[in-house]
Image (tube, rainbow, N blue to C red):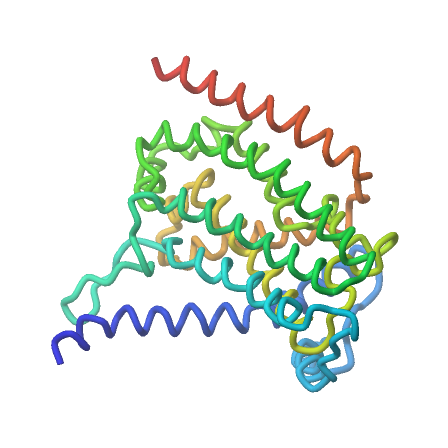
Length: 328
């Protein structure tokens, strides 16, 4: 019984996080379509529910009831495995993301995170890199030229942007003397890292756009030249799993931008609890990702590689050098 009571807070937090993450794409798809509509001076979804609020539910029902088609020439086992491989890493990442200071419940201090890791930042960077294997499997197993080209692009893009993304956070780690995300937030109580690490933030944000495969870096699923890219052959629930993974990566990157560079839950107004302030900041970055999608054109593939290797990588290395000199 004591063991159960000890595990109960952990089980409740797991259930809440998994439930919220599974339902999160519903409001986000509605929000993205509305943002696109207003940028393009049209109303967007309006028919299902008030101002189209129930449109994502209708879309979800449609996807879940559609035929699960597997191409005749596809590798059936890998084809079925790919969406799950793509979806698991974003869920794992949220085990290390803190949402605020610990709260007291019935006399017990409960941390607002699943696992307070000493190397939380390293864990997140390592696990998020695994998601590309889902893309590789989807492209290879589909036995389609468009899908294979999309997955090959994804591999090259991931290699090009993982390195500067990892280097860009070294300055933050140097300032906090820790890879623990809670301690990184605590180190920003007086001054947010965006003031001390503007170059690091720029590199991390741009590399994050490429990591999330969002415009202007959505080359792996470029509709104009690859159909739908690596998930061209997917339909029904398997396709919805890829979409779910894509939105979770966007939310994860938004949360990391806030934790690493914008003070986490620090600086909250007196009338807002810390977790709400943190979620509002994260929501702003999610909106920024969506705004970018309908504002910027897509880069050519050679431009994508040039930006990664000739711009972001030197900038991230220069940022480490300057940070080290200033800390002497």
